[in-house]
Image 1 (spheres, rainbow, N blue to C red):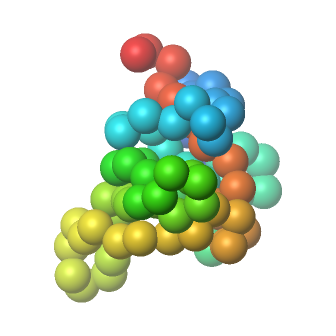
Image 2: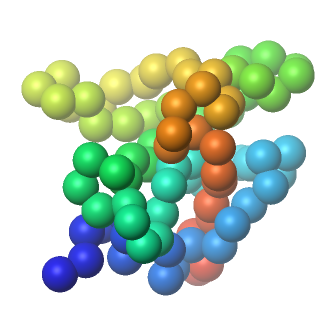
Length: 87
């Protein structure tokens, strides 16, 4: 069976970092992203005008949904953005 992150690549299209909008996702999708190799977050906006730091909404273990700040490209999953094909 496919993981959720690997199957998600079928319904999302790649998005340029500059075109991100709240509700888009950031992560690694597709083949090879099952289990610990896959991670996605919901983009919630840029922190700075240079578009290097961004806010996310994501599940965080026993804490439930949280809002966190990340740096673009600082982790294996934070280098590519996607938008749901239905939007």
